[in-house]
Image 1 (cartoon, rainbow, N blue to C red):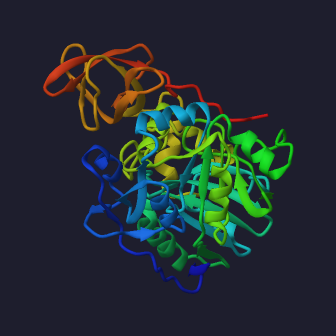
Image 2 (cartoon, rainbow, N blue to C red):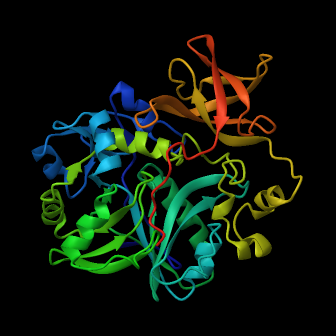
Length: 409
């Protein structure tokens, strides 16, 4: 664990971010997190050699060498496996930080929209780092790990940007705060069979272990910190133990229901779940209300403000407020509509653009996420999307596209 930012000094050791993906996955690596395409092997997680040993096809993503898929399952088969069994993802490339110091909550709440002070110990919440204009710098999961600090997981592709943002504001903050980057392994076990696997290995009843909570426990005798959350829409867990990363992964893979999964399937799963990919569905020009992420703003924070861009964001919460665009889900007839495809009204007027799109393996239909002008965002609204110069029918639908299976007790 290396302390990288404190109230007294601010330094960073995070390397430049590089991305190199095959063409069909290039859209995962593009965005406004200042990611760039370059050659080179990239940084390695603690499980890099483990991936190679198990048939992982390695690509560069956000400066890391990561598995895009595995030799034993194609992308479609892996997607279906996750929805019916359990898949193990390496998410050790994510930016993990630990925030401590007596003024940690005050400083954190100056940068995010969450009610961090009101978060119970052992609970997590999705939140947003915002800028002075109300745009989203990054989305992040905040976990009040114990009475002494927060454990925060942010996007790997935004690591440099996030740390620079934190560092710049901490330099001007009058208080006692330490933000340390954690060099820790992290895996995600996702799917309907995940809870059974964890319960069996921990020899514990998980009835009271609910979505967006975390705890210390042992899996097969290996001590871990485990949170019940994920990025697939399925019930699942994120599990951390750096010293025994391979031993833990081997233990999980001995379970008949568990197979390894890579970046490609993670993207199709999150799209079916209606979850945003930073740099595509949200960026530093997107306000929370426009993105349909109003729920991330704590009730106390709506009254008190106190976070960057509050003067731009909070007025949009008022009834009758002008909101120029809205994030919507679309079912697309014909060929899949990919990122940047133009959306037009039935009279031909341009009204928006697709931000993510692909076939849905579960629905057997083409789905997309997009931003459209307010007034065209209501469910059932018929529009057209331009694909290879041709207008195709599309309709606004409710998200998630596939029902989420989060365990809420």
